[in-house]
Length: 263
Image 1 (cartoon, helix red, strand yellow):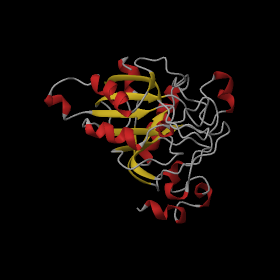
Image 2 (tube, rainbow, N blue to C red):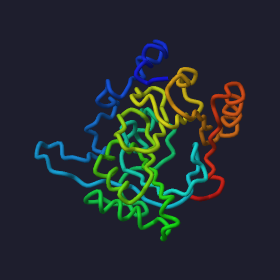
Image 3 (cartoon, helix red, strand yellow):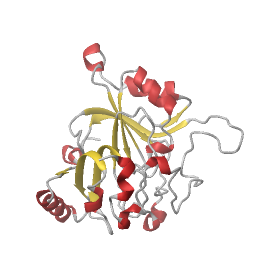
């Protein structure tokens, strides 16, 4: 299905929330794009000066969830998000109240403010195993927070020069750029998504007012449900399994890294 025609086919209940990226400029959230917790790639003061990439952490591990589960990857977690400030005092008002990720600041493993794309890519590449045999499998996952607040063409080009396949894990509220090799959208109920096509749609369940059946009409290669972690994980896992059995278009995603005790 072509994403350009989705608004005509997915129904009025979700069409107001789901829009094609070509028709949108940015997501509007209760925190707003000017919130201090959201890093900006470029100075908004009018000077036009370029700013650094704010990165929470960079680490090498196995992808633990989704369609690429088990695949070795360098994770680059960008600081900041447009759906939650990351501060516990704001959680009750966040769109994504169940978020289990620390994306605030730059104090994680290999975190910092990288001056340019080449500096950031050099750090990412340094974590990949050496040798030509390993280089052909280079894979980086750009995540957050919300990576599309900072991921830009300069970084995409620099990663490709170092032979990295680029994956992004996004909430889908901001357009993705050309050149990204694997687009995983994890929509949050109550947000307005503009990315309606990609490689992978991964939905954490349950969420209130979650249009799962209508998500299934979007233009993705893989559809996955993932049980929400926490005290109700066992029940949520059963819900996810039952959903997949009743709707075989969907597959089950588990956070295997939590069972394996790896990052």
